[in-house]
Length: 232
Image 1 (cartoon, rainbow, N blue to C red):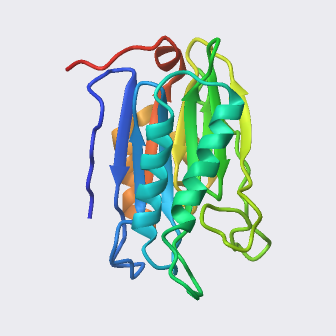
Image 2 (cartoon, rainbow, N blue to C red):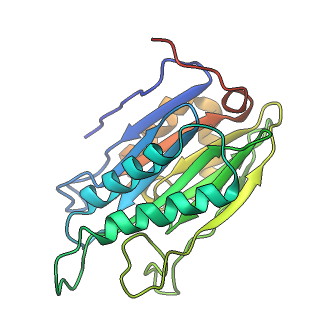
Image 3 (cartoon, rainbow, N blue to C red):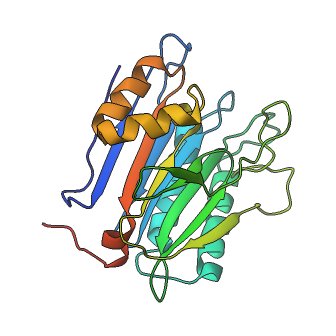
């Protein structure tokens, strides 16, 4: 099943969500989510095998976007992730073995220009150069067996582990935020080969092969940092 949603009318910001291969993977629900405003775009993936992953992802995204609506510094970004973690933790029921949890990756306008990239879990951010080569700029928080070692809603952890880095504004640079269904079933070289064919075409082809829900947001760094506003 392919559900495509465009959330912005601005040419510089193309946002796509794809639900792919749900029946083949035995997945009955879409637990990915994405949200944004003029200062932030974020992608979340509810924890598979945990209760209410879709609610966890939605709560994380709503909290983050409510707290960040203008360019901010790194400390403010971290505090917003902590608040999102608290909201997801509050969804747990007493004694629950596998309470709601979610990954979260975000690109936030930085005071003075450029972007903050912040993440927890295994949803990723890539920096895409003008020659269409990609650099992975986040770490996957997982162990050797593929289990997440950091995510929102982990009651066993003291606080939440957040990785962050800055991306300066640069002509032709793009940032891609995505869930693990986007990159988990193809080689990196395949991603680089598909994007020049068009973002929509890329997502369609990934949807045909992925065994997980696929969600991605593609951001033009120059446009985002310039503060281009949405049309009514």
